[in-house]
Length: 296
Image (tube, rainbow, N blue to C red; front, top):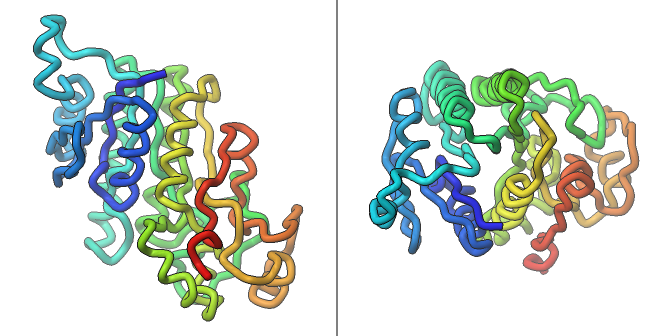
């Protein structure tokens, strides 16, 4: 069923693949970003999401000039997908990263909830698991990494994502709406599979990503499934592909490269250490872009 979707950050690395995926499924999308998205049929509204008034306006405007023809004012928005953020550490000072990411997410969720929008999908991150931007070599507490993990990031970016999940939970309870947080793995664009031979040759380089990834197009599928799935309230999903970025079976690989981390659940075959089981079982996610299709 076609939906009207406001997508923040659609010009970013993930968004520029997710937005076309949603359009292909028949949805109508307004991109809200500081930089235009060069894609047919998508208008970009330039807005600073740390400004609450700008967010309320962005979520209650026409998507394009055609909206004026109805004479009925802006049509209702069915869903908001919030990907806009400072995308990692070391791009801006730590306090700015934390402030921008938490305030913008609060503003987007508050505006959507108070405007009566019942479905919100936000971008959380694998960094909440505490290893990606940790100081020194930190071990994971257990594999597989599932959504009930005790998240403990050290860095400003990962911490901002934990706060955003708490913000989402609060508003979902307060307004009785659905807000789904996607703990997105290392996003891989189609042209980036050329990096995988290097990943395979240097296993320690992928520890910070738990030897997992998400194809940007498969991320589009997960977002689309979240929009279609109603009634979960606040829920968290690991947004990753099915398999480990290694040639060896997962249990054998982890015994060698993560010997200090206990295995507390099934890791059959080449299952990714950062588990997408919940996305598969609850949303119906079916991977389309296994890295082995693109790497000899």
